[in-house]
Image: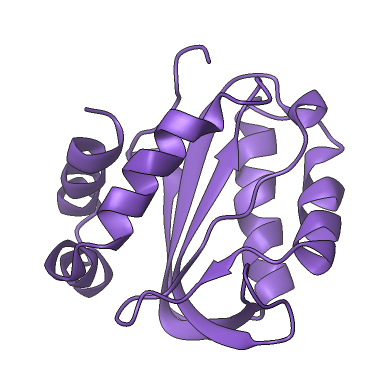
Length: 154
């Protein structure tokens, strides 16, 4: 995996109520406009989420970790959506079970197994209830970025 692009501009706070497709579209389009993914990424993310849901029930702040094939990625990146109003995704381990998600961690990775190390960091992060609550409660992007950077890029 090459250099991972992640900064304050790749954190999106959603204050209004949206549906899953709107959230995924917004995040994917932001990656596309930054040049990190190609024009097939958005459709691939939407299709894959429909076929293989990525919602994870954590018992506190539920997350979704959408990702797709490497052929849609120009440069490794991660974008995070923080939702004031939870959005219904479906569970990774039970695709018919709805889960209300507050954080979407979208991965755009150029190597097929490049996500393993990053996924371990994501799993460690989402298990930390206090940290996840700090992320969803804050409106300061610098604070949110500092928290996420510490856990995802270190």
